Length: 139
Image (cartoon, rainbow, N blue to C red; front, side):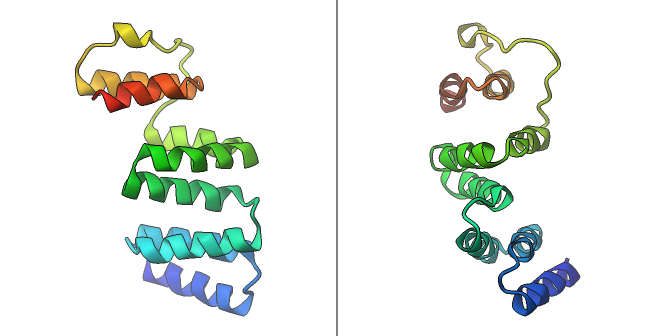
């Protein structure tokens, strides 16, 4: 991982306006558990191009880890507006795929944490964000 950080860091220095270098540098920092540096890199990418969906998405993930869903959700929405494939990427990371089964009725979900979380992912996948947040909040 250190090699990746060095390569992207050098590229960002040589071509400071190259947005991709800052996004990739942030991802290399995040993979090496340098969260503060990763966030700085993604913010720099957004300074250069406010419509960079991957940087927005990565900042949303960082906010989710640090501050919770309420802070992260606007970033996820913005990343999805900029590039809808970012939503697909988020759900694939979470292990949620469209299997053709409709999301369950929140009132019918078993009270255990795992059932509620699985149902929340299904609801979020179908853009039922408020119902999903309610299920997560009650877990």
